[in-house]
Length: 304
Figure: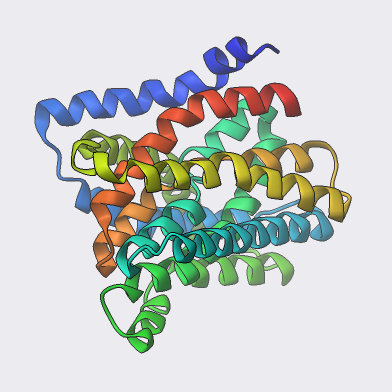
């Protein structure tokens, strides 16, 4: 499949939905906060729980994906921190750069993209990778977003206030203990999980509708550095990790592609919620997301 075919068949459907949401928002001026909180605190936890509870991947394969996801995120966070120190960014900009480089859109962009590219097998693996990235998002991400506005102690306490890690732990427990959930609970979980990806794409469109680069023209350098880390360096780290761990097949493809996703919309949500530079993060998210149409098309041509 050529780069243009990948862009047309795999990338463009996602951006059609996101673009329609942007148009809808420009007409009706939808408040994104309510939907964003539903996605963060309800639908996505159910997506993670339902996916892990019903996971049929081999334990070793799932562990490899989780390890790659977490290690790649931590290594890119460390790289962003070193660059921020080297360039003498203030703490607020430092935190924003780390957020944009570390928090990846493995959910509302990565899961549907991998499903379109690699089918049901790709979706199942993308969900495991997403779960690993969620653990980083709601631990390291919450801490980094908080550290510019509150004490280290309060930043650490914020980590325990979000539901995603608990949903992941519960889903793994149900899976490993071979627990059959009661029908109503199982169906409710499936319905809520099904709302997550459409909700994520809607939130992505609403957030991008409000993103602006005008205020940050003087800080375009840090934004481009973050984009380079997220879209180029992170997948290179993933290539090293999959080679080191001997990962092959669809699992290798998904691990590399997921690592190349742009900055997650949740980075802007967390920056808003916990007092980091939300406008910078959202502007960086816009740049990453637009550039990723090119970088992901090239990457998919290589890995497929």
